[in-house]
Image (cartoon, rainbow, N blue to C red; front, side):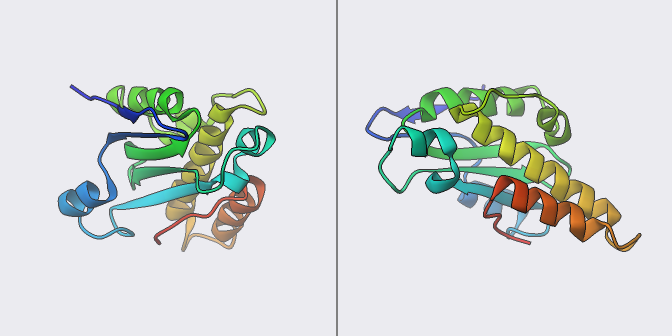
Length: 153
């Protein structure tokens, strides 16, 4: 069974599924078979509005096939956010489908919407690169729109 883990401190620290180390052991180095999408606290609008301490982030590990592998979240609401990621992993929901789900703004969950959109755009770019000039524009639009800091290739 998939078990989210939460440390109830201020801010909360939550994890579910594979960690960076687990994904590396299982799938090899980041960039080829999997990648990370990270949103730092200054781009989590609800965190900023609530004046959370700096250092928080949402980091989600995604397989190139669009399935969520795991997440690490440091935020005042990490315990609630990790549940959404756990459902995505358990039900094997693709990021393209998650990206179509609307989230209220500003909410902590809206941060995951940013992750899903960026990941869906990245996966779409992977299928478009080499087939025309528009692939990089999708990735650029997602990065600018979501003000994200994606890691990996």
